[in-house]
Length: 413
Image (spheres, one colour):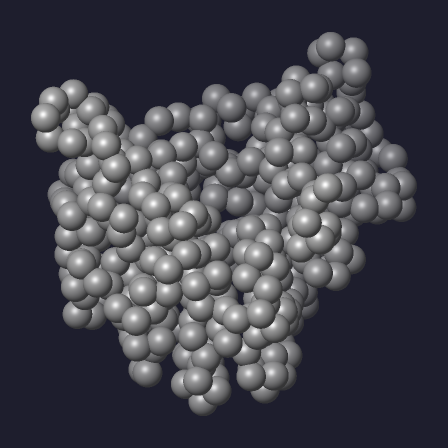
């Protein structure tokens, strides 16, 4: 009964693993949402909008965004990038960044046109390309090795992908699931290829504020030479302010590219929740209060990142320390719980490992093979989220410690 374009996707891995965590009473470090709320001042602004009788805040918003939110997004963008941005034509508010990605692909990509994707990718990318009728071309981010200390890609593979004359490239930095922050040199290479081959760039920057290495800051691709006129930058409120359930996202870029986003958006959701847009406007403009909230979140997440990395290393995993976002990737194959043989010799896949860990350790992670076209690239890996209360991570740490020693869970499993 399901259309063929969705044949390969099935149920999203996030739903599958969250249901599995609930079944086994596991600490859910799989799905990337905080188990704490965002700043009170943003929530107050939304509540005030709901209660402001006669101001229309509980009716449809303008299709491309509440004027106050568009203005706030544009002002913050200009302050951070120096790029001229008209809030009426160059900003489109969407129902989360996921919708912005899908609307951009459907508005820009004609059936049969190619889209370059870096794998592993956030799972909606591949589905969005399919919905647009596009053909994906993959460039693989490979795990750190003896020559590369971070996830890396082969320049020749990237050049070969651009030689196929794609319509656009979709890049995510800071990156989910690897935690990679693309360097300026890497982005300059992407920029040169986009200009040389006349390719549009879609940049998912939902983790733009969540970086942890001062020597590796986030770079906006749109600010590089020749890119302002060919780049759509996509972001959202959810990750920056721990309000993922609000689903307020946006695209920023030239009016012509935003017209393409709006062409699809108007028939997908038309507009996002009006009072939540009002709340978002209180945060998105780069106020002192917003900057303080971001700084506090980054400090907390950085501490969580370091804590969980240590826990995972103590459990026997090879840890790939992330420079951004809020996930840690590990190689699980050489872990020896209870002094047993390496898990890689007993479990056939990352999915089998994550099910094993959920059932026997009571900690749930994501198997990233589903984010690769060639699932074997993901086989030795697992992704853990650290966007949680410290108490949640400490509970996971206790369970992982017992599992690593070969002890059974407190419930006997």
